[in-house]
Amino acid sequence: MEELRIAVDGATLAASYSSAGSNTLIALHSAGEGRRADSVLYAHLHEVLPPLGMGVVTFDRRGEGESTGDASRGHFRLQAEDALAIADEINADRTGLWGFSQGGWVAPLAAASSKRVSFLVLVASTGVTPLEQMAYATAAQLRLAGYGDDVVERALDLRRRFDGWTRGRGRDEEQGLRDDLLTALDEPWFPLLYIPPGLPDDEGCRLWIEEMDFDPRPVFAQVHVPVLAFYGERDSWTPVAPSVESWRLARGDSVDVVVVPGAEHDLTLPDESLAPEYENTLTDWVTRARS
View 1 (cartoon, rainbow, N blue to C red):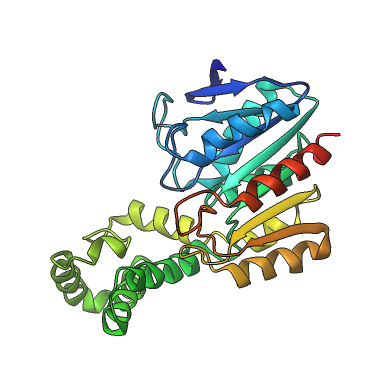
View 2: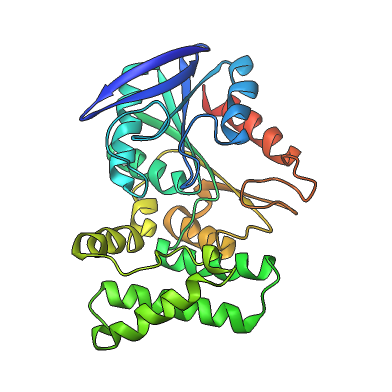
């Protein structure tokens, strides 16, 4: 495995490259796993694809791990530009992008804006806005943690009021929202709410809205390369049915969708092993896509 340092506008990206033939797959990150060593899914690509003649690049996202620059988590277009900069650096005959969760938004953005991308492999590519996705995820994570409908409704109400406040709604009830956030901060379930404990300044509001309002559906429709999209049947972070529907509306039957029975968001099974169907389908599909 070769260690690379790739200069991009305002940053240097630290990458690991398993070279194999003239084809390369570049892995893009989930929201919470921005470093090369953060997910077994990243390491898995290095293990299974190079022996098949498909090179693999994993890298640390801007501002994380050994990569420099301001953090790009949540900045989807900037992450897409970084992925394309890596593709230009590698300069493979055929370049694919693999995206997990948030990377399932970034990879289509990159493919829609550059002819450099030849195919996409996506895991939990969410087909709704981040605002919709996080409402689903908050409710699912709370229920998995054993909380009932009363806590779920309270949490979702706080998320709705927080989001509305960032958009200028409910400012006349600001103190009540501040008090409720402060009270919720003492609850054991607050970390599953995925909002700050206080209200943001103007720039924080702008960044929140920019991220939460990203709509992947028009982007999916602009993707004209082969797509393999995996979903875990039991995904507790991404609403599977609406996401599959978004890809079907955008691409019809030209996108290959695989819903893995019994699998979670990261395609692991209840025993925490990676679903064999994922590896088998991935290796077969990528072998065909490289030619």
